[in-house]
Structures are given as structure tokens and as C-alpha cells.
Length: 384
Ligand SMILES: *Cc1c(COP(=O)(O)O)cnc(C)c1O
Image (cartoon, rainbow, N blue to C red; front, side, top):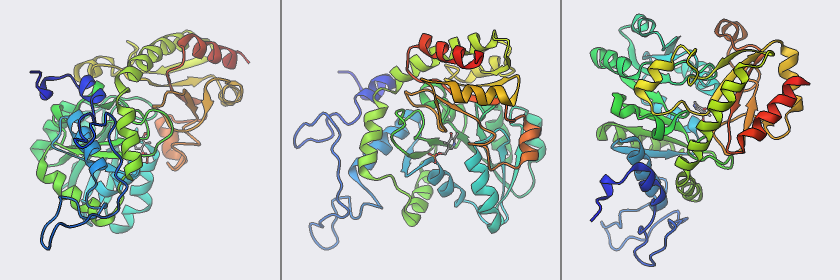
């Protein structure tokens, strides 16, 4: 007999939900919309009491999320920001967090404009520089949160080295694994305590779902985060849990195509005279090219590029036909973003400038279309 744990993750994903419904043998995971559950008798429970606290469809998804990341508990949220907000509620007034400066703008916004009011303080550092992380540690520091590859400049942080540093200083180590997914990068195996996802992106993969996830290495920490989730209520509804499980079945197929095309597009962009710099860890000139190969099995399908003027960037956004000018990433449809005014619009202008997130920087999420069509679209948009 093939043992389930011995099957490859790609197989476990495709098989997710199969056999879960013993009553009918349904291949597709059943959706349980019930808000509440009948008790067999006083003091007894079927294991389900009220859907905010537990739901069979959500449970199937949460087990799958934990399995994918190699963690002990997974939690499904209404969005990536709901997952991050719940995670930040774990900390107390006076605590200090260290985060990547190359960070999703919404994470910056919730910390800077909401949690700062509750005296949760932060430092943003270049997490691809271990010394910078080390130097930011204060007696109040409780955790380090990195995005690797970073957003939108695709900087690479050394997950193993930061995990060691965090162990030394007894800090929680959190990795936002949205850009690579556990099929390409498994932070818990490299020493992280918590993985967070915007499942709206690659895990959902079709630009038709908003969801988030937390996975913990440790069961007790997972239970503490579950307490926060159950207390505050930002759960993913059962219909969306089903849709996410359904979407995860094709994650491996989608990613394979997306990564291949991204590599090809990055190499092509690098040769274009109107393009000044291409930020893609799969290019040998990228500063994190070596490191990412030591901690991930692929370069992902996100890339950014700087063109020769703000006007050129606008021209490209106006002229693209197949690729859509839209925020978000990770879906089968290719999307092009202007981070300075979209995803990173809430980061102060001076800070954006210092990081190099100006209006000639474009971020491309490579989808599943034929790569020749994508390159043709970019060519006609660049040439104007
Ligand atoms: C989109 C995103 C988030 C926020 O997730 P939502 O699902 O939009 O709430 C967090 N981190 C990263 C890296 C993201 O790309």
C-alpha cells in the first residue's frame, strides 16, 4: 500500500478532499454551509459546534495548508491581511517587530496606521543583509518577518541564517511565502516558526478568490493563533474554502508554466534597450541568484523591471492588450502593476524613493498564457 505521507506533495494536492465524504464517496470536497450543529445530547458534540470555531470544509483546507508547508497547524482566513492582522494581535503593547523593507504595502499600512496606535513598534530593514537584521534587534524585539523574494524588488533573505539568529535571541521568525508557495520554498523546514500567505495569489491562482493562511511549525503556537482567530472571527467562508482546495489541485501545473515563462520573459526584457534593469532572481546578475537556489527549488514567476522614463512606463500600461494593468499577482492571467502608485502607494514617498520604487518601475506577474504571446504584447507596448 502506498502510504499517504510518502506521496509527493503534488499528488497530495491533486487528491485533496478525495474520500473525505464517506457517506457518498464524493470525489469533490463537500461544502458545509451550516452555521451551527445539532448536539447529540447535553455535554456532547459531534466535534463541530459553531462555524466560526470549526467547519468541516475549512478543516479540510486547513489540514491541507499545514501539510503543504510541513507545519503542525494551518488556519484559513478571509484574506492575507486578515491572517497578518490576527498574527499581529499575538503581540502586546511595547513589543517591537523587525520586517523586510522590501515589503507588501498593506503589511506596512496595518502596522504603521493601526497597530502603532497600540504601541506595537517596528523597524524596516534590508533583510537580505543579516547584519542589518542583527543590528535592529532591541530588548523589546519579539519577532522578525521577512518576505523573500521581496516585493517589488525581489531581494532574497537568507532564511536559514535568520532562523539561527532568531533562535539565539528567542524571537519568532515569520516568513511571508506568498511569492514562491510551498512547492518552491518551505520556510518551516528551513527554521521558520510561522508561514503566512495571501492565498489570493498563487494558492488561489485564478484572480477569483480572496483568502489568507497561517501555518505554524509548533502545535502550541498554532493553538494560540487559533484562539485569536476564533475570538476575532476573520475566518474563510466554507464556499471559498472549497474553491481554494479546488484551486490548489492545479498549483503544481500552473507554477511550472508560470516559472518557465517568467524566466524567458526576464531574459528577453534584459535585452531590450528601453529596459534599464530587470529584477528577477533567476537572472545570474541578480544579487540573490545563488542564495535562492540554496533555499528554494525555483525562482518564481514575479519580476520587476525599470524602464527609461516614467512616460515609458505609462505608455506600456496604456498599450498592453493581453496583459492587464491591475494589482494583485499569482493568477493564471498575467498582470502588470505600477507599485509606486498601487501596491506600495501607502509607503511614504521619501521611503519609496530611497528603496527605488519610482514611477518607472513596473512589476509583472506572469500568468499561464503562451509565452510568445506575452512577449509579443510586451514588445508592442515597449516600442510604442
Ligand atoms: C497580497 C499580499 C498580501 C495581502 O493579502 P490579501 O489577500 O490581499 O489581503 C500579503 N503579503 C503579500 C506578499 C501579498 O502579495
